[in-house]
Amino acid sequence: MSITRRELIGGLAAAGAAASLPEFLKGQPAAAQASGQAEPFTFVHLTDMHVTRKRKGDEGYRKCIETVQQLRPKPAFALMGGDLAFDGNYTPKADFEECIRLYKDISDGMGIPYHNCMGNHDALGWSSRRKVPIDDPDIGKKMIMDRLGWEKSYYSFDHDGWHFVVLDSILPIGGKNNPSYEPRIGPEQLEWLAYDLGKAGGRPTVAVTHIAAFCNRGQITGNRDYRAMDGGMVLWDTRELRTVLERHKVKALLQGHSHNIEEMRYHGVWYLTSAAASGAWWAGDWVGSPPGYTVFRCDGDKLTWEHVEFPWTPHLEETDALERKRIAEQEAFRQEQQRLLEKERAGIR
Image (cartoon, rainbow, N blue to C red):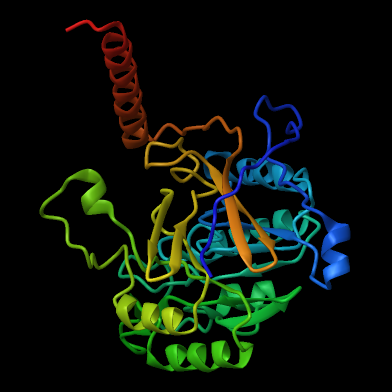
């Protein structure tokens, strides 16, 4: 079955915000009931929240959640795409624990179930820049999983005739002496995925990963030296993963990590990267896409979506010199593009 885009209408104004939110067409519930089909439902994909008090990121995330609360129809659940808290790799353990608490407390306020996906920044101390000893009992994924009551880092669930799979793209390497990770699904999880999809029996399916299977940064920037299999931005076993997804006719793989919206279709599978809820780590949108998330609608066996922005003004700190430079560069680019647009529309050479 192909996946189609559909028009979205409606919207509710966010509290105190000028921007409006989309409202999906509600379809014909009576007809659906008469035919025995499940009624349409929506869900949201939020990723790269990087929740922190730095730059008032906790307030930004609350604003994000407020807009989710106002979506109509009310989403059935949320898929949380990883990099939930800031930042297990580089911050002291106590700071990371506080960020996890903030993430949980604010997310709980959505009023709908949410399903967590592991991000590379959600693992404690899996970096050479770690701020914890390598023998810390909470190192790796254990800390965030314990604090969130998260039983398994990859799993699946069903909702109204649809199947959903949450993958873990953070594969541990290095052992006890140098704990780190590679961006892989890994053979054990791939085998689990294949049989999980087999058990689903062909039901329409959506999967989610943090690190993307496809991220076209080199082509987008025109950088001839950029490696397609960049070590930090894409899965190293994309080929193995996509063949499983293709074999089972999975509708879509939802992605994060790059903080930049991308949509790509290959061999019947949509690869959709949502905007980061944090934008550029709560310092504007210079990394690519403004703070936002994606709303999905499941109707019969069709999947449609719309990317949503929410209003947020960054609160930079005194040490954010690089961020100020990037924001200034972005604004200069926008002004130049506007100047060129007006010139070209006027026919001025």
